[in-house]
Amino acid sequence: MNMQEEIRKILQEKNAVLLVHNYQIPAVQDIADFLGDSLGLARKAQETEADTILFAGVDFMAETAKVLNPDKRVLLSAQDAVCPMASQLLPEKLISAKRQYPDADVVLYVNSSAECKAIADCCCTSANALKVANAMESNTVLLGPDRNLALYVNKRSEKRVIPVPAEGFCYVHRFIDFGQLQRARQEHPNAFVIVHPECNPDVQEAADAIGSTSQMLKIAGESDAREFLIGTEREMVYRLQKEFPEKKFFPVAETAVCGAMKKTSLQDVYNAIKREQFEVTLDREIIEKAKKPIEKMLQIT
Ligand code: SF4
Image 1: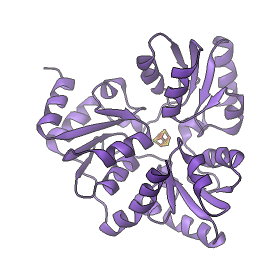
Image 2 (image 1 turned 90 degrees about the vertical axis):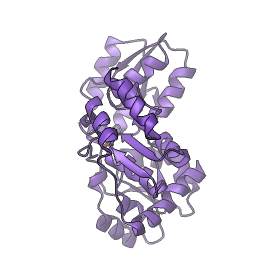
Image 3 (image 1 turned 120 degrees about the vertical axis):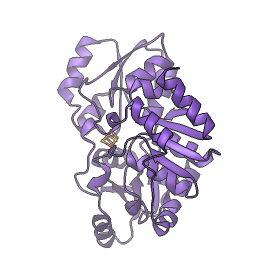
Image 4 (image 1 turned 180 degrees about the vertical axis):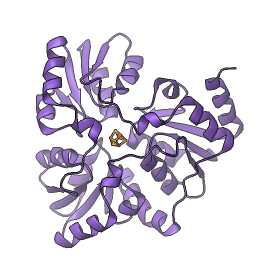
């Protein structure tokens, strides 16, 4: 029995479910019970009847699963899989922004800590940020921690969307630059270009479509194009290629690799479920407060 088969066997014996993000390495993607983006993973975490949720992703995703399932055991495969963007927003910063804009609603990207979520009015993902912002009562929305996502929503919404912090970013998407996109287009002149809303505004404007990873799957499935350039973490190309083997997918930037997502190896997944290690624990009060904005997002979408 190889390691992938052994993991699947242990998961079954322990009534555990393996949730895997689209940016994980192919060997881990291939054994997922569910493979998806933050929104899809949050939904699955809410629905599951398994006793244990094992996450192959990063810390905030496992925390979201714990908030939605406080009585279940939630494990993170690699303890050091920590999203650097989530830690760019501290609760004090958010509280100070709320003081500055007392009438604004706070919409927080799920890529944030549970402590920050506990202060938010609603959560969002890159797949639903625009819909969530539009559903808020106030005409002003504080949105963080990703500035590019806030600008993307601001441009398409009638609301005034203010990024908090002013310069929050995902380094994987920020460093996909316009020059790389131009060179990639020269190499693949017939390709349809889809980029993530965490990319810089000039990259977004130069693309044919903008979307979260789940929206990329939808767009690629519905498009007549045979070739695609994908502006997000490089591993998304593996997922797309597997779903649509008759089409061709290329990353806009080979260098777009998330170090946090790549912390998880197949061995880590095996160790985590075998030893039941790296359990996510959160303060009950934080769970109660963070649950409301997450559930509100799931209701809205
Ligand atoms: S891709 Fe960006 S937002 Fe996602 S986990 Fe990596 S650093 Fe965080």
